[in-house]
Image (tube, rainbow, N blue to C red):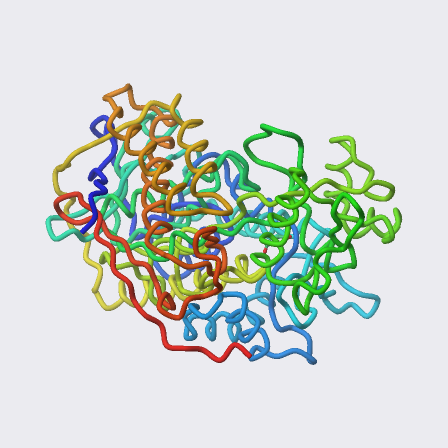
Length: 558
Ligand code: SIN
């Protein structure tokens, strides 16, 4: 038992309207859209709710691509091995096995659905390489606009069935909390809709199962590659409802985020790892290629290794960034292969063909999340999680590049199949939500920058016991100051960021080692075997957070 207290729910008005479905899917990235589309063929009524509009989530921003052993010279076993190595010994082998074996078929289905990947002269899908991969296995679209193309294809598929009464989409719908029956079974969500007519304001959507596909938590930090919608809403709601979270201390900082100057905050421009995959490399201010000799894969080492090397080099030189050199790739190639990155850099005043690009690590991906089993079930009956909000065990301590779109795709299928089979067996009856109970909290939206500053200062790319303690204290002070401010989307999101920040800081302070995305300056020795396992957190009935450590068997990472 820890002394961290997380309230049961957010302060919100009584639902003014209700709706119902067999399954509510929350989120419209690759995970949510795939789950909803597959469920729709199997159950009577699916409700897909999304916070802004269908294409606003993180999927849209994915540049590099989707990893799968599609080449005859590659194999799922090799993809498995690279994933386990990147995950630093704590991946769930069964989850990764499912990912790499089912992945190629799922990608081909995506192609059949209409996603257009880049192809070579023979018409085969072009494959490239990113950090941590020993084979070319990253399929990409529009050069560096893979997420956009996948999102387009899935949304087009949704539009083709939108007149079907079996599926309803509600946009501008922020999920506030989960509805639970008297046995804690999840039986719907409360949500705030900026709509018109009947569905406006806070309402309740009851269902026999809820799938959280709400994406990441990047906005808990001052600078991130994640879009503004990534405020950890699903993970925070699951935490308050009493679902087990796993490995939330493992946050991936992408090594090459364009450095826009001191104090630049919010979503920052990503320079895809695929640029290094095509031959670009990192240098310091003196032109030294500091990744050489640091790791056998040099500039294409796993992301945590590259980010740490950059942070070390920044400390040694006293600079706030290093540089990415892509000049030798040539203008013609860069413009054809990376049109979006080249255009964005140009808008910001950088010529990728003639100039070094200043880059520094920034928050990119949450490797932990709502703990799920192999079919996406969380610890709460009726609640599933898919994609970045979940912790399937696929990523371990550090996600392998371009495994996230694949995870969303593979586990969405598994979840849809599990739910439809259970519904057919009558295993998920619609239960009645209990009356709201327990403490409710709300932090004013104006405190968001304070949450982000506390997290960035003490729980960012490099942490220590002292820095985490001061972050925990700052967040506790903010939590104590939480008042009954008028609820609105900004205050709900800010409170979600606070709750996620608190548990992330707690988990990071417990793990006294450096492993993957969790870097402790006071425990610099790599992967202490005593910490080979998962950090589990759960909010108990008395609102206190309990933590447990679950060891993992040693894996062959040679
Ligand atoms: C990138 O393109 O570097 C990001 C891809 C990923 O996060 O997997």
